[in-house]
Amino acid sequence: MSSVSSRTQLVHKSTNHLPATLRDVADLAGVSTKTVSRVVNHQKEISEATRLRVQAAIDQLDYRPNILARSLIHQRSNTLAVIAWGIDYYGPSRTIVGIEQEANELGYSLFLSLVSHPTDNHEQILDTLISRRVEGIIWAIPEVGDNRKWIRTNHLDQLPPVVFLTMESRRGISVVSIDNRNGAKQAVRHLLQLGRRKIGIITGPLAWWEASERFAGWQEALAEAGLEASPSLVAKSDDWSSVYGECGMRALLEQSPDIDAVFASSDQIALGALGIAHQLGRRVPQELAIVGFDNTPESAFFWPPLTTIYQQLVDVGGIAVKTLHEMISARRSEREPLQQLSTMLKPELVIRASSLEQNIAPSFHLE
Image 1 (tube, one colour):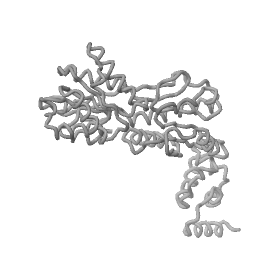
Image 2: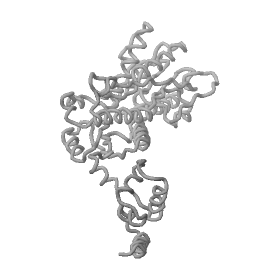
Image 3: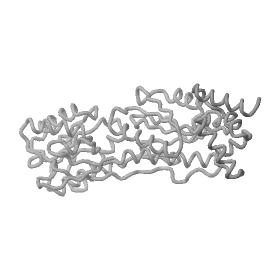
Image 4: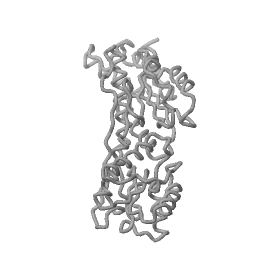
């Protein structure tokens, strides 16, 4: 085949929207496929004139490297698996955003698997991931009940690198979490500093590690102030929703009519609590201060605007990907694994009008 005929066929192929191959680029540029591969992979063993000629052919044919073929050659999929549940909740959904952003930055693709229940069979999930040759796993299912009992370091050694989210730190396991206990303490200490002394709590579902940590933080902050964490100051919730916030606030006002502050374990719970307080004529914050947890974008527009705890949820996802990337890199190069495996992020108090009577400038932390 003549050079002119070959190039004519290549142009005809590109106009018919067939994907160009490495061989097509090589034929059009008049070089070997090895030379094209060196240009695509940014290697330096060729002249600048040849590089420009190959790049012109790549542009003309709109050539895109075959990522799948490349991954098979190098035995790397550049794919991270994310196993998640509860992304209809604010916290998990924001964490997934952080995972996606950092994975894209580092050049990984994501395989997202949503489970129907946090206690689903982990063996079947892991078998699926291994068959897909993922290079790393982010276990974004919240710790609920005993759904972490399957984790053993000798079991994890048989898997690709794994990073766990929203669970208690454990030796030899990579974990990225928010310090929920510290966040609850900040909320209660803030109320104590304002002179509140009868501070109730509407918990989240206590089978969740996050909810139990926030409950423990409430208890510890009261104990530090010499106050009793009386059962009459506790309204337990089976969910994070506004409906349970309404039920919890009604229960607290019945159990302790003279309560002067409430720590709600989520902003949605706080929203329901605020609604009942208004219905029953309790002035917020003059008679009843309320603090939430999450700093959802809507919390600044509650009435009154909600004092809350800001947790860096997008950062949790990003740090998880960075940690996993380091673990993958260490395994590829057969280096020793990371020594510092766990990261606990400290949340921040965002003060608004639901706890302070004064007109203060609201503090925003939007992700």
